Image (cartoon, rainbow, N blue to C red; front, top):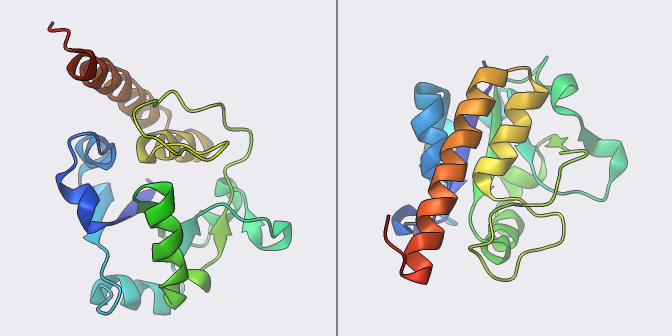
Length: 168
C-alpha cells in the first residue's frame, strides 16, 4: 500500500475546506499529517529522507528528474505531498532544501480539477485529495481511490451548499 505524508501548512490545519483530512480518513495509518515548520523540519520526516525512501509529488518542468508513480514506488516507501494553497506550497518548497533534493513524481494525464472552492488555482492544479486519488489509481490501489473519490464528491457537495447557503 502506498504511504502518503501530507506536509501541511499551519493554515491548512484549521481550514474546513482542506481535503487532506479526507485522505487521512480513507488511508488511516497509511497517511501521516506533518505540520510544516520552516526552521524546525519534522525529525521523523528528515530521517526517512536521509534513508532514501521518500519521493515528492510536485510539478516539475525537468522531465529527466520526474518519474511515474509506478516506477518510483518500487524503491520508495513514502510520497510527500505539500498540503497547502499553491502559493503557500511554492514557498514551502522553496524554503525547504530537503524537499528539493527528493526524487520527483509526476502526475501524468490528470484531468481538470473538480474542486472549485479555492481561488488562484494554477492550470492543471489539483487539490490534495485529487492528487492522492490519482496516485492510488496509478499504484493500483483502486478500492481506496474509489473510496476517496466518493468522499471528495460528498465533501464538494457539502462545501458548495455551505457557500451558497443551501441546506440539505
